[in-house]
Each structure stands twice: as C-alpha cells, then as structure tokens.
Length: 251
Ligand SMILES: Cc1cc2nc3c(=O)[nH]c(=O)nc-3n(C[C@H](O)[C@H](O)[C@H](O)COP(=O)(O)O)c2cc1C
Ligand code: SF4
Ligand code: SF4
Picture 1 (tube, helix red, strand yellow):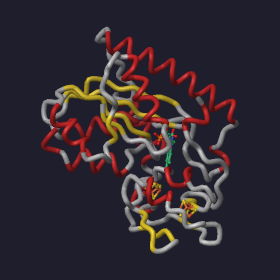
Picture 2: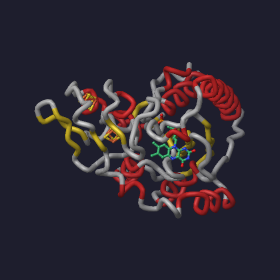
Picture 3: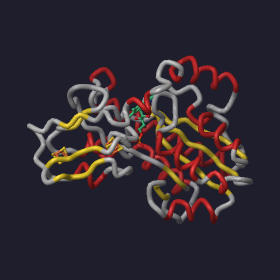
C-alpha cells in the first residue's frame, strides 16, 4: 500500500484498510525513497491520497509520472479522502494510471475532516469531525469486506463522476497547484524559529536560514506545516489559522 497524507486523514484510512484486510505490511508514504521499491515489487497495489480541488496533489501526480515505466500491468485499487466532494477523486488518478498501462481494479471515496486550517467556513466543530471519522472508519471496514469478497467498489470511476469532478470544481481551479506552489505566508513576527515546519515538509519545500523558514516554490499544499507550527505562523489559502487539523484530535 502506498499513500500520501498531509494531516493524517489518508494515513489513518489506509492503515485501517490494511488492518481490516489482515495485511502485515505498514503502508508506505510516497515521499519515502522505499516507495519506488514497494511499487516495483508488487503486482497489486492500493494507492491512497487526499483530494485537492477535485484533483491530485502535485506530489502524487509527480510520483505517478516519474515512475511511469513501473505501472504497466499492475492492478491498482484507489482510495481518495476528501472533506466533502470531489466527483471523480479516484478517477483523476485512474485515468493517469491507465495511460501508463495499469489496470484500475476499483476505487473508494472517504469523507474525512477538511484539512484546510485557514478557511473558517471549512472548519467543523470537533464533535462533528469525530462523527465524520467514525463514519469513515465504518466505510473503510465495509470496503475491506468487499475487497475480500472480490466485489470491488468503483466509486468515482464512471463517466458521470468525471463530469461532476470537472464541472463541479476542477475547471474553476485548473491552475491551483501551480498558483500555490510558492504562496505560503509565514508571519515572521509570530515565528519562533523552531524549524518544525521544515522538518515535516514532504517536499523539502521549506528550509531554515538561521531562525527564519524560507520556501523553494515546490509546495504541494498538504497543510502539514500549517497544522504543525506551534506559533500558528503559517497560512496558505486563508489569512489566519482558524484551527490546526490533525487526525489524532478526532480519534
Ligand atoms: C488545498 C486543498 C484543497 C482541497 N480540496 C478539496 C476538494 O476539492 N474537495 C474536498 O472534498 N476536500 C478537499 N480538501 C480536503 C482534503 O481532501 C481532506 O481534508 C483530506 O482528507 C485530507 O487528507 P490528508 O490529511 O491525508 O492530507 C482539500 C484540502 C486541501 C489542503
Ligand atoms: S514551525 Fe512555525 S514557529 Fe517553527 S520555524 Fe516554522 S513557522 Fe516558525
Ligand atoms: S510547505 Fe507546508 S503545505 Fe507545502 S508541501 Fe511543505 S508541509 Fe506541505
């Protein structure tokens, strides 16, 4: 199992799927160098990731494309986590993987807390997020049962889902991944220079110059640093951190 996760939602879902399937391997994050070996050495894989504007996070797209020669003939089941809606969250990866010769065996969408910590309208009360995570857990367990029976769900993979994803969001946010690559705002008055943001970034987009973090223009919008910063000094889409999101709060 391979996955990407910014604030832990996808990590939680894919780990639960792994346990529910009785698998012993620990799912591997795609930013680790071992991920390519996991991809190369397995014929059947599960790939899990969060949805961003009904699209793939840049880091997931790049992982699929950079390893394009490895996908031919692989059977891939897709899991996409999202705050509310994606239309074809699994479909976006499915189309790319099919182009590189993979066989997409199924897909599932899992609703989880929204990870955008700096947009007030997206933040739900803790009680509601706990309920969402509990319902997600049930759905993941049901998915595992279906996989065991060979009755793979095909959520997000049809033509109607494709149209929903495209016209529901993707067309309006076509360029979001490019636009936000270098758009992190770091409030130097709040920043304490602890370096936690640079240490947790999956893209090595942040680096410390003395006590001050700088960005290299390679952000994948995962919100990991925004949720980890002890001074709430980092924002991306919004202007102020409303609530830092991490899965552990809702378990
Ligand atoms: C930049 C960005 C864009 C997002 N766009 C969507 C979206 O289009 N639809 C949706 O339902 N959730 C969206 N979300 C919410 C995440 O997909 C959701 O919270 C996901 O479970 C986060 O998983 P993670 O903790 O594994 O990163 C977005 C989150 C971010 C950070
Ligand atoms: S995590 Fe926050 S406080 Fe620490 S260096 Fe980064 S921006 Fe500054
Ligand atoms: S800079 Fe922050 S939001 Fe961007 S990729 Fe790194 S951890 Fe994620």
